[in-house]
Length: 305
Image 1 (cartoon, rainbow, N blue to C red):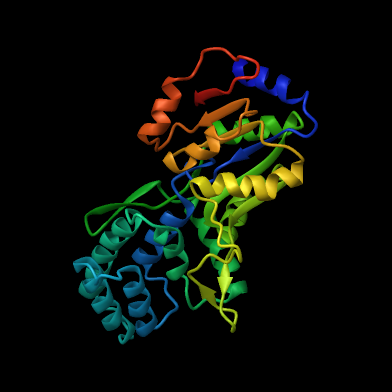
Image 2 (spheres, rainbow, N blue to C red):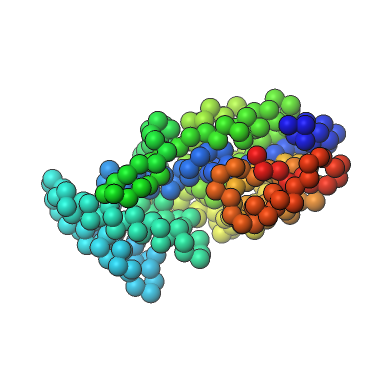
């Protein structure tokens, strides 16, 4: 990877060069929160009552519940009243919730960013941290995809070895490392630990976990300014939190999807914009096609790993 060596050589001429990495599908194969959601559904790992579940679901469907959401709510109500779960009702709930997860993932707003913590309502801060750490360690041992009720779902996580190796090389060369993710901070920190990257990562910018007055999880962005590290928000978070911390704009940025495009294209002094080989959107592929085969000083190199 001569282009990476060239970029590192140029970066070392700067005062405090650093690299910004997205987390899900960039440093991992599969998404930490999406995978956790499906695992919660399959194993029915919930701590909220049926009233909270229905109220929460309705908040994500302001124009009325979809058919899948209606069945999920009805099934959850029945299961909540059973000491031993009826396998037919549980199967109905699982199938309906798979539909809900697909619908939420396609919502045009930011609802898909808060839905993972909606499913964790009923946990307090300490329980959330413990659950997240145990869940992610478990998911690293699971197959990447599995079947439930005849439907495939993301059931496990893997390190994206290509970009984890790049991260470790940059760290070894004295380049600072930051992670900017639209996942919740508790999940990102637990994933960094699970991947064994605690020593390498200098700074984490993620969605702040929010808690109610009694200390229980809320499905909300806990950043008092309302800024989310998602799409253009990633650029704003980098400018607000990382530029003052490192004293300059990033020299490297790595992402995987259209939501990372602003982060990869908004910093004129960026030396290398890296694209994960997994789950690339059309804009990411278009960026990679514009890649040069060689490094040009002063011009960003877009490379698909």
